[in-house]
Amino acid sequence: MTGVLITAIDTTIVVLALPAIERALHIPLGSVVWVIIGYLLVITVLATQVGRLGDMFGRVRMYQAGFLVFILGSALCALSFDQTSIIAFRVLQGVGGAFVTANSGAIIADLFPSAERGRAYGYNSVGWSIGAVLGIVLGGAIVTYISWRWIFWINVPIGLGAVAVALRVLHDSAPRQRKRLDVAGILTLAVGLFSVLWAITTLASKPFDTSIGGFLIGGIVVLCIFVVIERRQREPLLHLQLFSVPAMSPSLLAALFQGLANFAVLFLVIMYLQGPRRLAPIDASLLLVPGYVIGGFVGPFAGRLADKWAPVVPATAGLAIQAGALIVYSQLSLHTGLWVVVLASIINGVGASSFFPANSSAVMKASPPQLFGISSGMLRTFSNVGMVFSYSMAILIASRSISRHLAFAIFVGSTTLHGALAGAFTSGLHAAFYASIGMMAIAAVLSATRASRAHAPSARHA
Image (cartoon, rainbow, N blue to C red):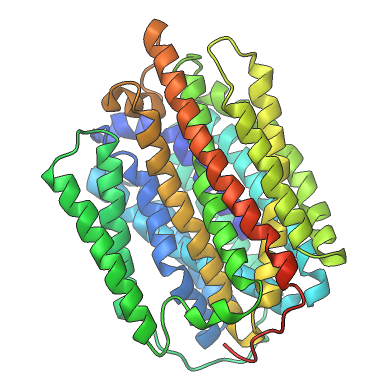
């Protein structure tokens, strides 16, 4: 729970600090978003491999090592002195985050029997909700009254406390396995995702040109090469044989489309509140706190439902509830009561807290025990691929109605909107929310198909 909490704090707290980081380090407006995307991209690329390291050298050991790297990266981020240093240190922080998030799910699968994992993942989701709230509240207070550097310093004592507890209470019980790292897969996935993300993110702030086209086409080509490499590898980055296990494919793909649909919601709503509604970043973020708080109470209950019945029920219901929240968001206007934003955030929080523990339980229940680390890493990879593209695509769609540079400025909280521009930008946000509704519907359909596979014979090995 502490591992999830500290990564959740880092996700929301950095969003609030972007304007201060941009000003203090003199980072160009179009580059400051890489403080967020770089962190997520590293976790995405490394998730399965650090899960494999957990299978090889002990999941608890790799989990503890991840905390230490995360603490080091946080301290260095606090000492950053320019654009290159803050992004580089965020990448290092992401390496630690990958070790923590990829191995935490496998550790829970080791410690709890299949019939109790949903409850355990439910309590883990409480850690996320508490961390998100702390990130918003502490982030606003720290940036306003102290210094943006303390949003990273705060990770140090929390991380050291978590390491101390982990050293005392966590012990490896799973047998070690001899495996090899997929270096070619890591490199091609990293280059391909980075190129496509660079193109999409740049397109959100600049007009299309040959450079952007080259990055986009080149990234797609490299990702195709990645797929060819993975099909020929004896121990690939993405363990394709796992897809022969019933319920694994829809669970992973549901995580992908849920991340694609929902991760950008935080940014889109904050853009709406900071831009057309002209709220300060801290005031905008506080309106989302009730959703995280109530969602935290729902997580353990949804986990118990996954244990008692089947993960497909709370997971699919959670996705449908989130789609309902997106429909509410898509109707926001310049005169909508702010209570509607609070209501939608609560609906979204309930849906997310229903989906995550149930879906995690489904993946680990479907996974062969000897592949818990890889399965947990694959779940993190699919979810994060959706998350990193969610942000870029949402900004791209939302910025169609006003200048791209202005859209970026609204996102980081350095400007507001008035008059006709405010109305035009709100219409652009509607288009982004409609796209998210479609992707959430796909996730719900994929999740529902697990019902027909629940009694299918499992693969004998993967």
